[in-house]
Image (cartoon, rainbow, N blue to C red):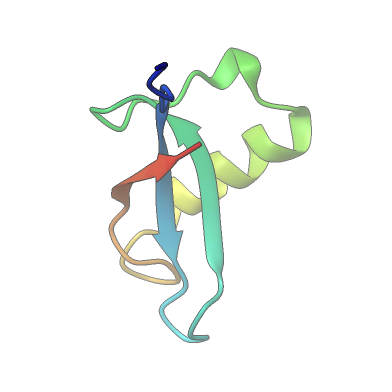
Length: 68
């Protein structure tokens, strides 16, 4: 009998302050660190934007565990 292995990954989510269900999500580690070298140019720009507008357009980021 084999046991199915599950891999846990994490995402860093910046929720939009004005539109429910909208926001930015980026892959990260368990501590919320995003490896910007692995992001596309567009994703990197979105990540830097989301960080810059915390409190004005996005909520503080939250680390969430995602089960693959």
